[in-house]
Image (cartoon, rainbow, N blue to C red; front, side, top):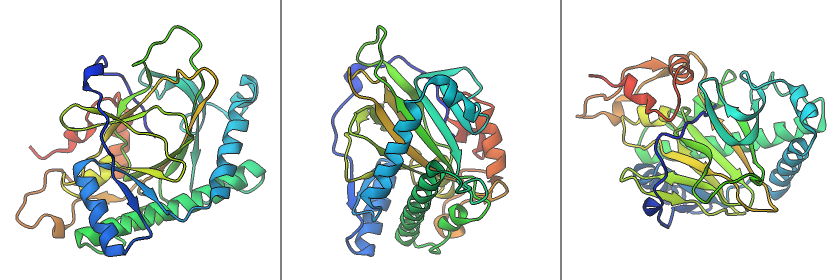
Length: 313
């Protein structure tokens, strides 16, 4: 789960158009692995095309998501509040963070998605496809780093993986908002890897280490991929867990929808940098479990830099 807070006022002069890496997964595995590693080091973010997920699966998930969000509020609230799974609006998490959106949080493990309705069947099909894409990307990362192929992917494929699906709906803002206002505040994702698919409404921005904010243009052919805190820790800081945010939707007649898969380890998985990536370098982070990191995450407003707590001093 991601929760966020707006830490600093937005400075419009720090927003700049920059070309974000777009990686074609149909190219040779060696070439793709090198490009992905480079993007993870420089941005912590990239797009993938020719990803193998059919348009039909994506469109069905989008249609079912919009159908849910367009229901009357009392019907949406019947699924229960997001604690941890369910429906939420405006309030994000339990620490006072808010945003201009509504959302649905869904578990992704096999026991949780019982195929008893069309919605759940569509979710199951989408999750299966996007999980495999996430694992393919993680295995390409492993190849590029020269570590065992399943080092990262087995954590997401594990039966007890704590992965989740988040559907975010940003309706047009009807009250007095201005360009530069926030829909979902600055944060990084605590998990291993995030795959995001959105419709053609803009809003996503990522931050570089120099403080620049980069708008991410919608792309109907691509999935956005970003590195989470766990992968930053497992690469000893070599990869960037990119900070990102979503702007308030000021389009008068169009909603923004994002479908976000967060690939996470099982709760008791041990998180540590493998020896192959340390070589002569000392480890930056302590060894910890995903359960420990997740508990730390939920205890803080997530505009904070949470990995700092796990640094070796």
